[in-house]
Length: 314
Image (cartoon, rainbow, N blue to C red):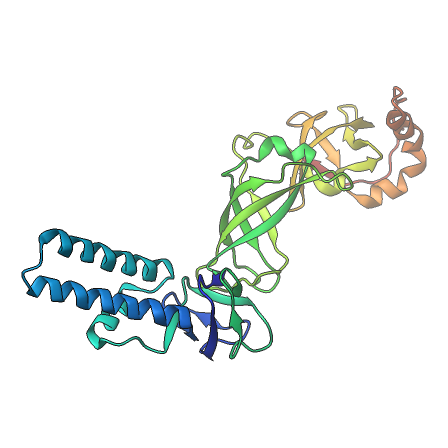
């Protein structure tokens, strides 16, 4: 936020539009402040008094007191964000300027400003005149389900993609999480810091966030389309050694890029059905067994002569 610590009026605005780019140290506006003019004159008077005493045979204590007054006046100017360069210019000129220039405290873009036009605006101490945001680093909000939380933590590396730039990826990391899970979606929001040095990403864009998960290299992965969902249960169709098929309840882990991690219910080397055509053609044969499993009952044997199918071996 850009604000002043003194009362005054903006006479000239050098930045007056939302969206303008500014660099640290750029001139934002020229301000007329009677209070600031008076303080600058007091500083010049104190400086002249010190020089006068130093040139005379004044007592050292008197000179020291005068220097303390000069330093106090200088500190007031610093408190009001008058730069060292501006104070040096004041000393060289020997007279207080009518207006003082106010500089940008940071680089970024103007994202908010007070009123339609800044010129002529009366300022009060602490009033926010402009808001400047640095877009070289952005925050992305990503939602994770409760079942995913054991895989993510603060500091986890992230990969960010946007539809506007196909094939491009940005790096980031999780800074922190919201303190509570959303009561409706049952998801927890993470805030991901994204490096945006080239300013390609814009605030309010939709992004896809993918995380690198440590320790998941030996996970059992199957195509996501092989999983049948029914309420709180998830089922896959497994081919047994005798050529028969059985529905089996599984526990799900992370899902990414069309693949689904299975944490319980499948072992490496087993084969699952992934063909939706098989599932449609075999619906009448598997319906009873699958329904029993989803209800929590023991399934009956699968049919002896299933329809043609496609398998996925993992």
